[in-house]
Image (cartoon, rainbow, N blue to C red; front, side):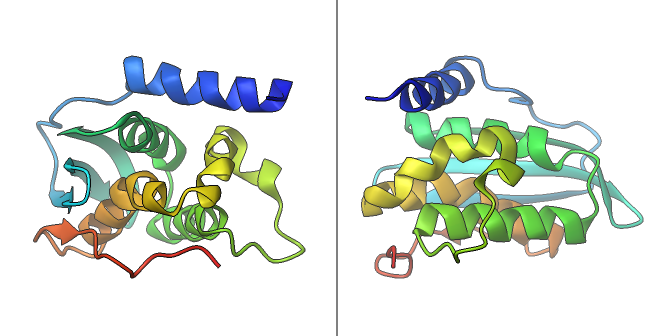
Length: 157
């Protein structure tokens, strides 16, 4: 394992053990729930939005290390961003974990989220890494119903 892989693994484990923004947001004006029936991951994303900006974000839930770390890092990455900016980060993150990066893809532009770049090699884990992101998208679009990971919908290219 390379030094970079070791660093990425440590970042993921740190967020799994000490998740950021892991609390019910009392002043949330949007929320959505996500569920991955394949491995039992579940997440609720809470948003405090005003004028198209994510003023605050948090999450609660249970799941594997990748699912919890991804949710934790997602909250840090999108807090203070507009819906358009958060959607762009989601798109780039999803492209990375799906393994369908174009030649111009800038991994460094995702910052610490690049720690999930190796997930594309494990198709079953793509759903774990992306569940919170799909749930965030549902909350931003005011679709509070459960987001369920669908078998076969996300397979890396």
